Length: 101
Image 1 (tube, rainbow, N blue to C red):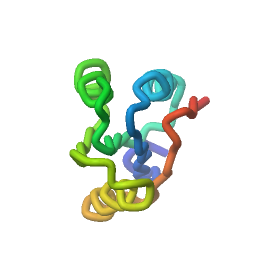
Image 2 (image 1 turned 135 degrees about the vertical axis):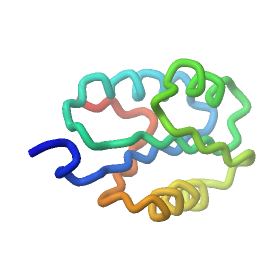
Image 3 (image 1 turned 30 degrees about the horizontal axis):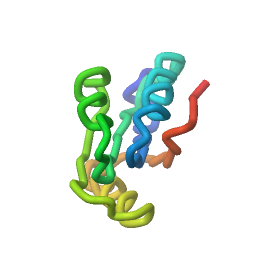
C-alpha cells in the first residue's frame, strides 16, 4: 500500500510553555515509518521560546499560535477545527511530553 492509500492522520499536540518537553517529542517523530501523517502543534500563548523553536527547528510541523492560553479544551478545539477543515481521516491527540516509537 502506498502512502496515499493509507489513512491521512493528523497528530495534534497542544502545548503551553513546555518547549523542554516538546523538543524531544517532535524529535521522536524521526522514528516513525508511517508515510501519511502531519504534525500540528497548537501553541496556547506560550511565553517561552516554544513557537520560535518549532518554527526554526521543526519547519515540517504546522504551527498554530493561539496568542493566549485558551485552556485544554478550547486550545485543542482550535486544532481539531483546523484538521476537520482539511479532511484528515484521523486525528491523534498527543501530549507534548510523549515520545513516539
